[in-house]
Amino acid sequence: MMTVSDFMTLLNNDYLALVIERYPITLDFLANYRLSDLATDGLLLDALAGVEDEILEEFGLEPYDLLLNLAVFLRTFSETRSAIGGVTSITINGGINKLKQPENISLTISAGEVISIVGPTGSGKSRLLNDIECLAQRDTPTRRQIMINNQPLDDTQRFEMDGKLVAQLSQNMNFVMDLTVREFLEMHAKCRLSPNVNEVVETCFLCANDLAGETFSDDTKVTQLSGGQSRALMIADTAYMSDSPIVLIDEIENAGIDRRKAIMLLAKREKIIFVSTHDPLLALNADKRIIIKNGGIDRIIETSTEERQSLALIEKLDNQLLKLRNHLRSGDLITKELINL
Amino acid sequence: MKLITIAGPPSSGKTAVILKLIEAFKMPQGSIGVVKFDCLTSFDNLSYEAAQVPVQMGFSGKTCPDHYFVSNIEDAVQWGIESGFKLLITESAGLCNRCSPYINSIASICVIDNLSGVNTPRKIGPMLKFADIVVVTKGDIVSQAEREVFAFNIKQVNLTARIIFINGITGQGTFMLAKHLKNALEIDTIRDMRLRFTTPAAVCSYCTGETRIGEPHQRGMLKKMEFKK
Ligand SMILES: Nc1ncnc2c1ncn2[C@@H]1O[C@H](COP(=O)(O)OP(=O)(O)O)[C@@H](O)[C@H]1O
Ligand SMILES: [Mg+2]
Image 1 (cartoon, each protein chain N blue to C red):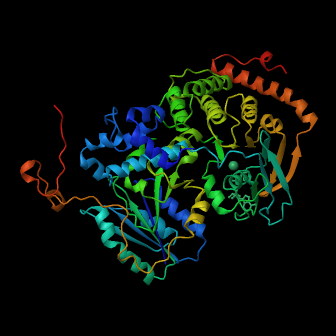
Image 2: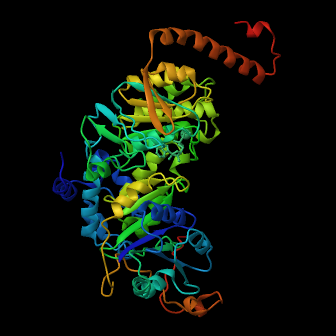
């Protein structure tokens, strides 16, 4: 593990070109200070001597500060993601429902497990997802407690997780960047400091196409993808690029993607998955389902063998509907034969 | 009294965040006051009044908003103390991307909007760089990946800040922000404290009302662009 002073030594001894080659993110740092045109065939400090004082002054910096800032920058971005690695289980300790009755429940979920959350609109499904996201410690209205690896968390630990513990996916989310699919994936891979950008980008792209009903090319603008294609790309991206060990999915029923395959993919990546849903296909595909009533966890049902067996039939029904949708889309007539069950 | 300074580009969601934050503090009505610093006009007082939060508005008008902030912040603190507040929150609109109304040891928050473009964090400057906490709004409507890229770009500019995503409509996330701010410094004055960053040095003829264009009318501190041939 390189320390800040190791990076200082590096900056004081190696040509800037070499530093950039080893730590490409150095280019971002320089661009942030309008120093993209710096000569790289020498030491950073020497190159800075040729820069107008005014530029550094505007940023309130002396050349030496800049060097130190870069060292701290490189150290921060080369840090291993220790805080969130190694999450093997999460436990929900019950609190109270809206009527202040105790939930009397403790549920531990391990990596690779899928849990669905079902209940009427307004019953408290999203609230449960929120409790998980903020790692509630009996200090939210529901008084629930969330434990990680069987341990409660103090405030410092909660802050440390810094929002990196959970990845979220919901119906309301859209892409807003003006980038093509490939540029988008490359940018995300770069932020993750992935060593093999091309490989992970390719994997994500192929996987997203596999999940989406209609295929798309990697030079499509992300903002021009259909709802289903967007959702497919978001899921592939979460599976292969997000570090977050927990994935919260809030209502993606009408997404026009292979939902079952999508959830399976996330589970295979050893994520802990919560799906708030009304969709039988998604709900029965989970290992367990949490029944929410009046803001509280009413019951936990383990998916039975009978339910599992009916999954195939439900999937058939679902495909049938999909087929009808596609027929409508391409302008065909809907006939009785098409609906034969 | 505790003091918290909040800054951010126009329309980034500062007022919504502050209102949700006040709710999350669960303090008795009238124990939190707000001072809003803006340039020409603002309608935020209506939102605060509707929420029964005592508010004072200040408009910098033709003077530099940063200079205006520093010149008035101690008076604002005294107003807060006289009003019996337990907590005073200042809201400033950062307009030139160089505004950074942060004071050493006073809790400083920058609010930016996840829809404003991925590279925006890299362009905002001191207002982002010197904040203790960066609040990101509207993250609930963009993809997880875009939230991560945005957070990464914030981190590039401010390595140590805590980044908190807040949904300004539901208030999701304010709970953690309020927790962070529980330990804000108690003050009875901020006289002799220092700004975290210098304010823009602009004392030119245009600051004092000049409207004519051209070299002969330009006096004082000027910065001229260099046009390469
Ligand atoms: N146990 C609880 N105690 C108090 N309020 C609750 C509880 N559970 C849910 N709520 C509140 O009920 C409202 C509706 O819940 P929500 O999670 O949005 O429902 P859903 O996602 O199932 O449609 C929210 O304002 C939520 O904060
Ligand atoms: Mg909901």
